Length: 88
Image (tube, rainbow, N blue to C red; front, side):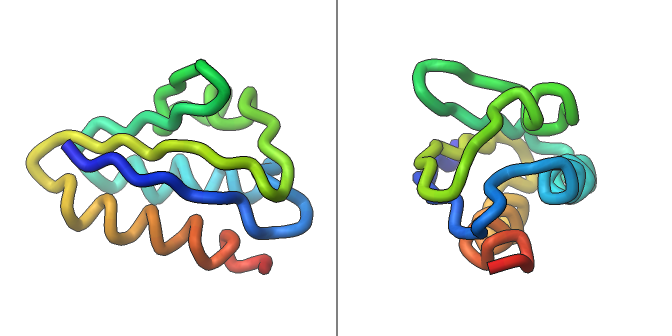
């Protein structure tokens, strides 16, 4: 299992476009992917789950990945968050 804390860096936060992009990227991998924020844990392969976070800029969350391709999934997903979803 890989667990990594990330911070939302783009000005608009985790809105519709980046939420959809997170789900699309996560769905390429077999590993389970969950996002934990403020006591809640959501399946990050669910657009409804990701959008329900309503995470503004500066929000900190834990990304938790587990499965056969977790290393590559973590690398790509953490990088995507760190780059501000291409909006920062």
